[in-house]
Image (cartoon, rainbow, N blue to C red):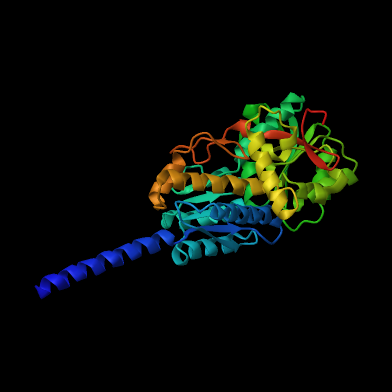
Length: 387
């Protein structure tokens, strides 16, 4: 009889312990790691991304969290340095044991992190532009920004619509610039564009006069196409106007922000680039499905931080919503289930486009995700409009 009582008591204790463990597990936070360039030469990219993620986590936790659990955000600053990003990725996967990773801000850092995410079988959503992040497809790596190939094709479309087919190409020596340069040279001829000059600038260059002198010396050049991030493109734009150059000047989505306009000043007037819808959200027609999503994000960010976010912050906004949506549909933070759910994303409206992912496409955007923006009066406006 005593043995039966002890056995029953033991069973009750075991059940209570199991329940307590389950409850504790349910209360454990869902951990999302982020590696961002919060400081350094591309802080204009990483800072709004960090602020956006912090805002979204705060909003979500105020509503009860995700799957009934709070969300914990762990942010590491890589300063735009790929080696530092790799170290942070090791820490997130092996020490922090995060459920997913968002980042990095730059292409070089993202490419350095991917092997760690793959090895740790941890879903990773990059906020960088290089198509090499998702092509060829990596099992655990996804991204939100439109690719550099898409960016180049969209610029080509706009050039040809203006009767411009002969260009000078000037690209940064960083990962983003190199990738964009290679793609431009690869696909130009097939798309009716002739690259007459192919020049490079380096991250610490403070003057681009030498490169621009070669452009001025070539009478056949009809437009200039610059691909880069950081202060370089703004320096080049200033030099461009100082030299009295008037050829149409195109930049990439690597500088699609107010920060570029602030750095370049009046010299940016007339510059065009392909950008996410949110950069020109106010100019979008009412029927555009991305207008309400973009305006909602802009208003929330402005209310919290007192300024308008950049499309770079929008990349983080989209990544967080993609991840939260996948976790809800998976009803789990099991890495494999979340990864599979990301691949099954359909018709998710973001600031950067409408996402439709698959096993063969870990971005899920097409060229309609890009709008051509033009700098007018110190602001980005939708090209072709009178606004």
